[in-house]
Amino acid sequence: MAYTFQDSIQRGIIYLAKSEEGFLVETMPMIKSDYFEFPSHQKFYTILKEFFLKYKKLPTDDQLLEEVRGVMASNELFADYKEELSEINKLDVKSIDNGDYYLDLVEEFAKQQSLKDAILKSVDHLDKKRFSAIEEDIRAALTVCRNVDLGTDYFSDVRSRWNRLKDSSVNAKFRTPFETINEALEGGLATKEMAMVVAPPGVGKSLFLANQAVRSVLDGYNVVYLSLEMSEDRVAQRLDSIFTRIRQKQLAGRVNDVEERLTTIQDKAGQTVGKLVIKEFPAKRLTVSGIRAYLNQLKNHQDIEPDVLIIDYLELLGSDSSVAEYQAQERTAQELRGLATEHKLLVWTATQTNREGKKVSIITDAELADSYGKIRVCDLVFSINQNEQEFDNGQARLYLMKSRNGRARFIVPLKVDYTRLVVSQQSL
Image (cartoon, rainbow, N blue to C red; front, top):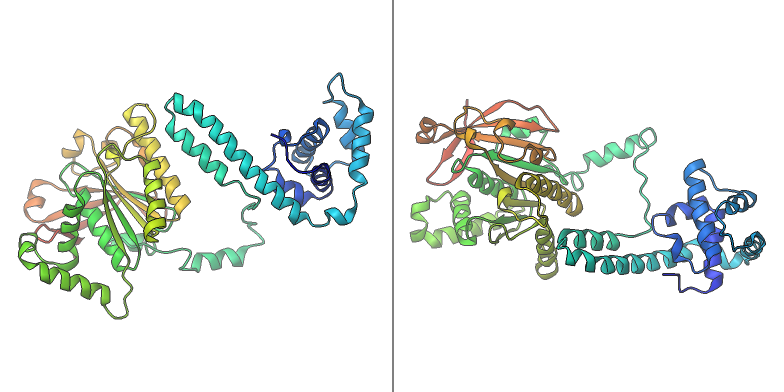
C-alpha cells in the first residue's frame, strides 16, 4: 500500500533519506519500499538502504543514479529517473527542515500498514490453526516505532552503565527464602529473569512457590500466582498459614485471627507490602498468549502490574503449537522468558522430574522429565531432594543445578514445617 501523502511529502522523505544518515537509520525499520506510490521512489529508497548497509555511508546523487541503471525495468527510461531526482533536489529546504515532522508521518503510516498486513496474514494463520503466529504478528506490528536503540557503547558508557546497575528502581533484587542462595546471587534475582524449581510429584514444588510468593510480597513486590492445579481458595489457604504461622488444621476455627494478622502485616509501620493476586486456570487450557492477555486485563481493570509472576507449574501450561510434548515444553519455557523480558518481571515456575528422580539422592539435569531444553533459558534452577527419613523429620535438601549470576552445584539443607507449610533454610 502506498503512502497517502501528497507527492511533495513523499519526495521530502526521499530527500531526507539520501541527505541525512540519521533520518535513514530511523526510518529503515519502519519503511518498506512498496509503501511509496511511484516506482522511482521505491527504487531510490531500496538503493539508499542497500548502499548504506553495504558501505556504511550515503551514496552521492551520481552513485544513486548509477545504481538505478542496474534495477531499471526494460520499459523504463533512465532520463525519467534523472528528472525525478532533479525534482526531489528542487524542494524548498524550508519545507523539509523539520525532520521530526516527517518521522512522525512515517511512523504513523508504518504502524497502520504493519497492523493491516498482520490482520491479513491472520486469516491464513487461522485456517491453519497457528494461533501463536497471529499473536506474534500483531504484537510485532504494535511495536513498530522510530525509537532506535543501538545498544551500549562499551568504552564510552562506563559510568552510566555502572550507575544503572546500582539503581535499585531499575535493578530490583528478588530474594529467595534461603539466604545462602541470596548470597550466591549477590542479593537475589532480577527483572527479566526466569527461575525454576525441579522436584518429583509430592516433594514440594507448589509449597516452595507459595513460600516464594510470601517472601516477595513481604519484600514489597507485587506478585501474581497462577495456579493450574489447585483452586484459588486452596492456594490462598496455604498462604494463610505461611503468612500468619497458624497451623493448617487450626485455620478454620481462627478466621478472625487470620484476618487480624494479615491486616497487621499490611499495616506494619515502616514496611511496604506488595499486592498478591491468585488466579486459577484449568490445566492445559492456559497458554503463554493467555497469560499475556490476563496480565493486560489485570492492568486495565485493577491497575496491577506484577513484579513477580509465579506459574504452578510448567507441564500444566497449554501450547498453541501441535509439536511433541518435549518440544512444546522447551518452546513454552522460551516464551515465558520472552514474557519476563517484555513485561520486565521475574518469572518463577516449577517442573517435574522423570521416574529416576524418585530414585536418586541428588536430582540433576539428567532427571528432568521430557525436555532438557526447558532449563536452557532459565537464570536459576534448583532441585528439591528428600528421602523417606527426611520427610519424616521435616527435612529436605536444595541442590542448585544452574545459576547464571553466581556459583552453582552446592546443597542447602532445608527445614519443612508441614503443619504451617513453611520452608526455610536449616541452620548448620
